[in-house]
Each structure stands twice: as C-alpha cells, then as structure tokens.
Image (cartoon, rainbow, N blue to C red; front, side, top):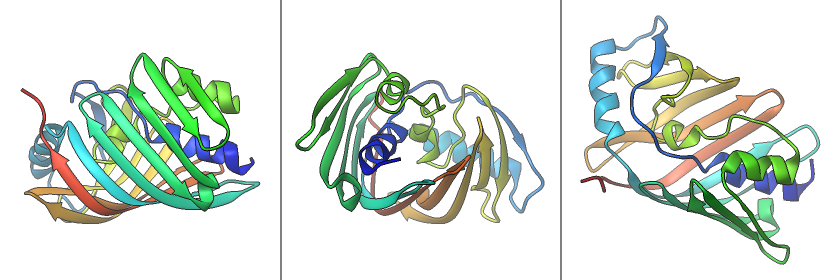
Length: 206
C-alpha cells in the first residue's frame, strides 16, 4: 500500500454519517458500572459538533506514516484535513452523506456519495468505515452489534465491532464531557492510532 492510498484510507476512515443513538451492544465483564455507562453514553451522544486537533498514524503491511489531524464536525457536515509525511503535503475531505469530496495536494479531487464508495473507488477495498464519528467520542456505532468492556470510570476501554478492535487508553475532560484522548483501531493488518491534543466539543442540535 503506497502513501497515497494510505492517506485516502486515513481520511475516509475519519468520515462517517450521523444516525440515532440506539445500539445493539453487549457489555463484557469489566471494571465499570453499566448504569454509569448508560448515563455517560446519553450525555456524549448529544454532541453533534466539535473541533479536534491531533495526530494520526497508520501502519499497514507495505507502508506506514503519520501526520497532523484537523477535524471540524457540524452535525452531518465534516471538514477533515491531514498534513505532514502521511500526505506528502496535505489532503482535505469535506462534505456530508450524499456528496463527499477528497482533495489531495498536487493530485486532484475525487467525489462520491459516501465514504465507503470513495474508499472502494480509490483503494478497491470494502471496509465498514462509517463508525468513527461514534468511536472518536468513545461510543459504539448504533447500527450494528458491538461488544464492549468498560474501564474503572465506566467509559469504553475496549470495543469490538464489524471486524475492528478499538482500544481506549486515555480520556480528557473538556467542558464537562469526558472524551477520548488516545485510541487505537485495528482490523486485519491495518492499525490506526489517534492522539487528540485539543478537543472543542459543541452541542449544535435544536
């Protein structure tokens, strides 16, 4: 996998559509309290806007790389930018479900109706990538089965969903919300690490 497909995978993995909070999850034996988890999940689920600054790293069989991350989310609209060695410059993914546009510096623009479609077009891969809108907040995606383990503070420690294993190793409090600061995603032989330096959560719903 060359750096360009690696960059596309990084960006598309970060873009997801919005849906309801109901989920089909099973809670494994862990340190947390399921009732506290439900309260935490309801609070975090109200967030439909944020601004994130951080770093992203990807390890794949034939290549690896890292870069800086900027992610602006406003309900179902996303503006995600990567720069640094991973992109050999910069890349930007914008849009909402139905119209997604990827712009790679010095290479051009690509459009699709969904992040999955854009991933299939650019990489020839079919992966369940529309979950990170939830995972980045420390929530399982609501549209498929998941298995979770809670930490001592009744937040996600481990999540298994649709062939991905997500590990949460650090949280930070911002404006009354406890949000992931470091998480790792693994599926088959791809590993994605996200380190969030700055969380600015917002509730934009009516």
